[in-house]
Length: 153
Image 1 (cartoon, helix red, strand yellow):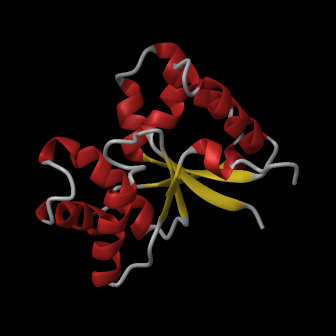
Image 2 (image 1 turned 90 degrees about the horizontal axis):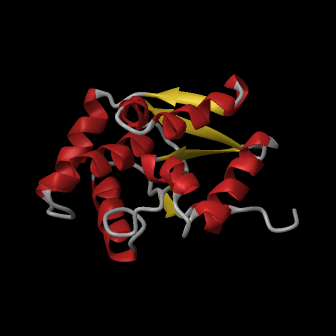
């Protein structure tokens, strides 16, 4: 079974960041080989509209079969607001909360990000998941692209 992973905007940006480029390219190579499907939200596409053209256009090379389109719906917005009410992050990080909540509400098993401050952060992951469990959702794995690569599979 092909695992579906949610990507936030930092993953696309990682293609153009020297520190993350290699691992991000390897991750997208595995996507193109069919090892993953990407859950991509309207939040991602909205953020990419403000990105440089070469960043936004990168996803054009993905096949439709490798993409699962999902939306920030009212349920996800309410969950994102709960993350803020719990003060997991500040209001300036609303979009980060929306990414996590959207992936959670749509039952995506893994969210992939390079955002270490607000998303791929052990203390924050525990707090996001405590809210998820309290509200009747399952926990979500939050990892970097490097962490989920297939190693010789």
